[in-house]
Image 1 (cartoon, rainbow, N blue to C red):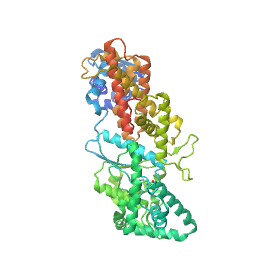
Image 2 (cartoon, rainbow, N blue to C red):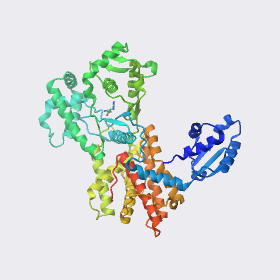
Image 3 (cartoon, rainbow, N blue to C red):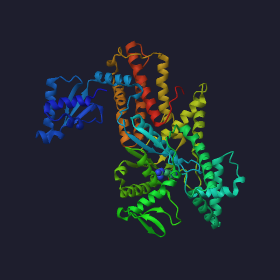
Image 4 (cartoon, rainbow, N blue to C red):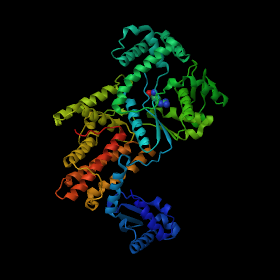
Amino acid sequence: MKDFKKSISKSISSITNIDEENIYEYIEIPPDNKMGDYAFPCFKLAKDLKKAPQIIAQEIKASFDNIKDNTDIEKVEVVGGYLNFFVNKVEYIKSVMTEIYEKKEMYGSSGEGNGKTALIEYSSPNIAKPFHIGHLRSTVIGGALYNIYKFMGYNVVGINHLGDWGIQFAKVMAGMSMWKEEYNFEEDAIGEILKLYVRFSNEEKEKPEFTEMARQWHIKLENGDEEAVRLWSWIRQTSLDEFNKTYKLLNSKFDSNNGEAFYNDKMQAIVDELQDKNLLVESEGAKVVMLDQYDMPPCIIVTSAGTSIYATRDLAALKYRINTYDFDKLVYVVGGEQQLHFKQIFKVMALMGYEDYVKKCEHIYFGLVVDKNGEKIGSRKGNSVSLDEIINQAISKSLAIIEEKNPSLPNKEEIAKDVGVGAVIFNDLCNNRIKDEIFDWDMMLNFNGETGPYVQFMYVRTRSILNKANLEFNDIKNIDFSLLQEEETFEMIKHISNFEGTLTNALNKNEPSILTRYIINLAQLYSSFYSKHTVMCEQPNLQKARLLLTKQVGDVIKKGMEILGINCPEKM
Ligand code: ARG
């Protein structure tokens, strides 16, 4: 799109003789469109020009009105020390809509990531346990970030840092070695593995020999014992097959499933390196890195039992990623409970001399999933809900709503899938990620609320209008952009023009909710446009212009939703 800010800064620069680039930086978007489309705070120049901001504003306006060479700007107003600029609406509309028309699928992409690599680590459930609701947030937030980075041109590597190692795993193996025959793994492998795990943990409370048995399995596994490795691979693959069904529903993509186990043979090197760099100390039989100088508890590297732990594997993982991918960013999408863990990991790596890489790492955390009373869902108390159950419930609830609203719709099951999954994802991404997510069926499936189904419904509306009109836009030469200047229409076009800025902002803050809010607003703007103006009106030129706009709104909604990981059905 034409850069109106640039055009304004050029004019101000020629009037004031101040560097255009500085001026560009200062230009703001006013909070209310009655104050114009762009504003320039003149107090920024007060020092250089040695004048009061109000005077500067008056003088710039006077020259601006005199010269009249800037056809991009319709009028300038002075309000206090501010200059408010009103763009030439027709120029603006033409420029936005032409850009959308020309860039098509890539409209909104800044290309800022071209030539850069971003690693997004997300989802990372623990194997041999069901996929629970806490991992939903990581999966959904990480998935959206994956798509945002990719769309902005990054080479993205999505990593599922599976929890496929550690003592819980050894417990399952120990349990299997005793009771394998008693379980029906064919039917529901994960469910059965979990039952076995719970049984083992319960019996362990009374039988200390169980703890020792698990420890032995852990050591066997770390030493590459054949039977241990075979059992481990089976459990891992079975779990992964199960998780993949959920990933398919959620449209999650991973380029690497290298989990904790992958670093087993890379751990000794980390221990040695820490030793060489004089960072390891003995403490109560364990080997640790002291972090008291940084107000943190010690980071345990080798336990007193001689085994590696979660942190060791994370250090090995980061070292591996440094060596393998020449990354520009590494984002860990993991819950807020692990803030200390990541601070420790980053600090230890910095102490080891990898500060430059640590600067590129960020722990992107998020709040809990709570019910409408604020109670945590899926806590360890045993009220854990599996993700599959939730998604299937969302789909069947959506199907019921569709059956009621539109019983003759073809492909109801497919559409219910898009709506149900969309509702779950949208709800997760709707608010600032740091906030707890409220999980409430009525709220998230409300077709009139700020929900996924509402947005999908608005998209469907744009498509049904276009289908009725049956018009192809093979070129836009004959579109009369001056017909789209009404208040709501222009406001909507301005909003569309912020798509790229919204994505940039979402990327910089690693905050998909910025995009979600943008899409809700666009859907709402279309809704008010639609209730005020008839698209299929009598005047052919007006109809054509409104139809093109309708198509473009629909395309941007669809693209935005796709980036969030949500499919927009064509009918619903
Ligand atoms: N599997 C872990 C859990 O469920 C999350 C892993 C997060 N990633 C990491 N690099 N530590 O708690």
